[in-house]
Length: 231
Image 1 (tube, rainbow, N blue to C red):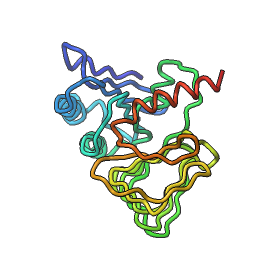
Image 2 (image 1 turned 60 degrees about the vertical axis):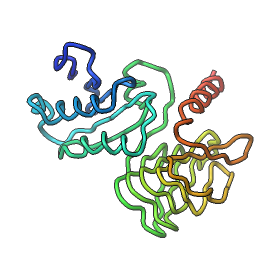
Image 3 (image 1 turned 90 degrees about the vertical axis):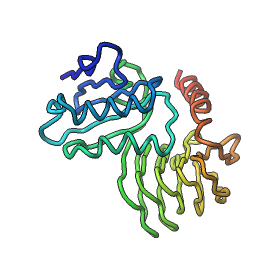
Image 4 (image 1 turned 180 degrees about the horizontal axis):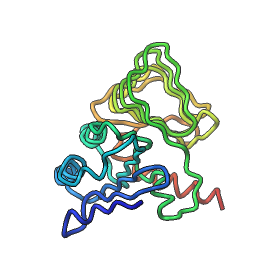
């Protein structure tokens, strides 16, 4: 099954939909104006042609490519998908497994998970692969993942990424004020809270924190290094 959104526009659309073995893959144009993209997405999901998405629950992957989203932009996009009762968001990010498979890239991409809701104080969560948490992590809440951890909310508890020794893993949050950070075996105290979305990563076993707008440049270096190791 292939749903081609290009029929809705005479020019290249800001959103392209592909059918996959497990559900639907939404590819968001990296260069499109955010307002235009969101308007188009709303028309696609709720306009005259929206009936093509009606039916039973279907797994959805949303891939925004290399676009660096702010916290507000991410919520603006995700909110539209969440508004459809039969959509189950399976993965969200840039360079998702579904995109990689579509272009037949030979990679060993990690599993990706979406967790909706509050992580309560004292609550432990563990994920095999990357995880996106749509909600807050309260003080003493403990999130562990073998891959990356992304929190679209306040990270106030404990986060441990790369728990099986992956030193390339990162921890990112919209509001960054954790009790403790850990990547692989490296532990760090919480950095001072800033208003911008930030992520933590390792350089020579030293914990570093940077603004999320710098992530794409760093991630290119990480992927290049990972690909070299696989050869």
